[in-house]
Amino acid sequence: MTMIDLGVLFAQALSGLTNASFLFLMASGLSLIFGVMRVLNFAHGSLYMVGAYVAYQCVVWLGPGETSFWVAVAASATVVAVLGGVIERFLFRLLYTREELYQLLFTYALVLFFTDFVKVIWGVKQHSVSRPPSLAGHSVVFGTTLPDYNLFIILLGPAIALVLWLVLQRTRAGRLIRAAALDREMLETLGVNVNLLYLGTFVVGSFLAGLAGALITPVAAIVPGMDAEIIIALFIIVVIGGLGSFWGTFLGSVIYGLVFSFGILLMPRFSLFAVGALMVAVLILRPTGLLGGRALK
Image (cartoon, rainbow, N blue to C red; front, side):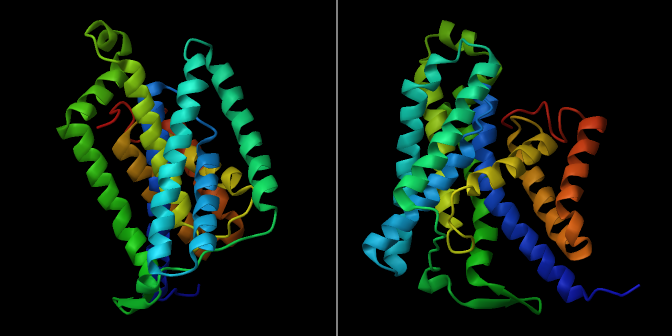
């Protein structure tokens, strides 16, 4: 049996962690929305796709460069957050009292709509965005060369996880969000504007999707259908970590990223099978997920 160099394993681990950080940015919004609103939002991947296209369009308008890239990231996250707010306020809110099947069908309709929308506006041709000049170089980490942009993404994921955790645990809004996840009717009885809380939660979740969509543009092709590819991974992550569990989502992202990355190295044809098999094993042994039952903690 051929021995694999430790440097290759380390490089593969860093690649897996980079992927995990991207996935966490997206999955955290999906998990937050489900944890509070109990809505399985299949259109979350579409918001991520729209964020990528908006970032691309901003760079086209502003031209490549350091400032234009970060302006594009901020603009795309903001635009998608506003879009998410409009969707929640004028569409989702009409479905909260309906059966879950209606919500699923509605989010699937949104997926179809946004797929055709980006085709009409930007066509079917692949697009890409250059890395910001400050992160275009490479660094050597324990003998492994790693793009600075990937290193930035690896550090950004845990940083955003920490910020979200502090907001959920140490602020009044966070306490209300956690309370809404447990008992919406009780909050309404206490005079809390739950509709506004739901709107804010959906906006934050959409903001994270748009942010992830913008940040992934330098390392992935912007193309119609990129939402369908990612939404499957996101649901595998939240199932592994536990639906509605914040740290479960973080753990699920890391596990998915590493298993998929090492799966490509060791079993290229079965890398997706490996994460799928892991999800099945979790569902059988622990149906609530690894950290299920610890919603938004």
